[in-house]
Amino acid sequence: MKILTQDEFLAEAPPFGGRLRADGRVDVYESAAERPAPTPPRRLIDKADFRDRFSAGELTAITSLAYSGAGDALARVLLLRLTTTRDGIDLDNPDVIAGLDHLIAKGALAAPRKAEILA
Image (cartoon, rainbow, N blue to C red; front, side, top):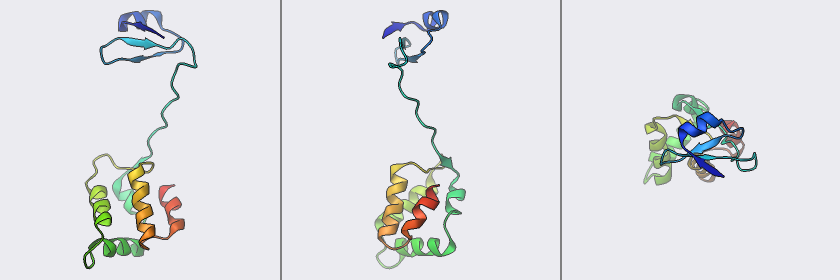
């Protein structure tokens, strides 16, 4: 892999591209094998759209789990994080997946619904 300035990179237009470094220079890929695999796009949905994937009964069960009696701290944290997100809900985020697994383990959500909600 060679390193070029941005101007050199633009002038040369290497066929396999490159990666901009923090110092402003460019690491040039000299073969397709050096180029990293593309990052899959994030599957973001609006938090209201995410909420709408749950039935009224599921929402009631989740709310009851979080706030009835002593309440379930993890369920409260999940609800807080979902309601205060700015970017929407990333359906592939490990925290979202773990949150659904927790709701299933506590009986607030049926296991087959996880795949439907994350689809």
